Length: 260
Image 1: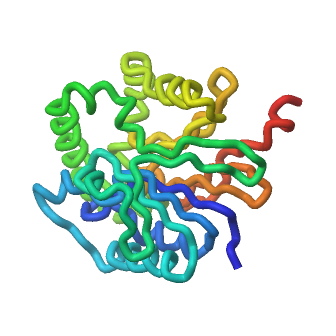
Image 2: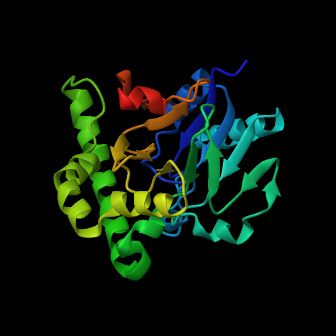
């Protein structure tokens, strides 16, 4: 029996050293669902053009998702900028997995959310691709450095996973949001289409928040934070952090509860 109505995942980055496939497998085992929405950057073709790291755990992630689709669970794949080559196949079904450029999802409590990766709202990705590629290479360097730091932490007996790339991102998040207005742009797009909010990925920054009466929801990633969004059978949307400490980070209740 499904444990939740829907699971929303983004930025898994299969094919890279940074992908935390083991943690994702653990999460998927604990969260059978009626719907699984893969909201972009599931496979990292950018990184794989430089070098490929494809582990058994990553292979098992793909097999598990395909198995879900074969067993009747709805699985929808919305490509992002790192797997944008698959956007040529939007509208096609592969192995019972739907490929779509975007999707409007209706929650159990009647709200309608735009599911979209989010690179469309990133001015760097849209208009300065070379900057985005350079940033991706810098991010890959941080990931490589993090492997050495993780080894040192283990030798020193320090518990938990610490991400150098995530730390750097937290330090510049405020400046980036000020310059590129990503979250507000995503919500503005949803408002123009008469929707209740947007569920996206792309910036590796998981959150559930209200922006001018609409819901902005970001799935985060499975590189730094190991986060996902789940929809309960009553329509509540919850942000789950699935790392060494598993905890619910935020909850978006039904509209009536928000008004109190």
